[in-house]
Image 1: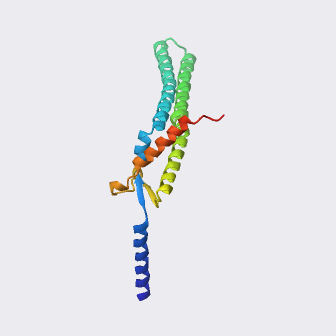
Image 2: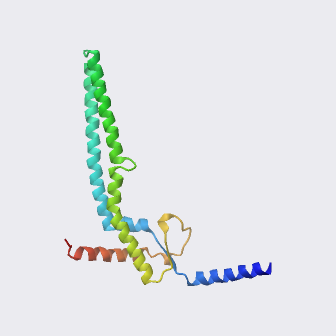
Image 3: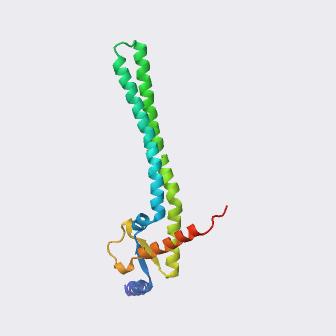
Length: 181
């Protein structure tokens, strides 16, 4: 029993000592991403692509509506085989539309792929900047407030502005350095 109490006390002493020497800070990655010029540019590119893809779907919708309207207006004079042919064409185009929507906007569609392609270099740069700032300032742990794991923290522990400044420096450096071919 005494041995357990001694072990618990030693553990408490080490954890208190660690807590006092540990430099724990946090950032709000959501704020960083929302204010980053690179993220804004990526969003603009993504929205332009999305609009093009939405236009493709709209064109299919228009064609389906035209075929259906044609079919309805001619239904009384069409033969059974003519009706079946028109219905089949409408169904085929409707299925093509559904496939197109899935291909573009589905779980692994072009929109998600393009978003990942655009954000990957930004997230990599952010990770590198966070690591650089953490090493330079001897931070033990950097938490992400956007992840929702922080219920309370002193505002003085928020290094978001520091990360934004450092990101801005790297963006300026990236645009002033000559591109290598």
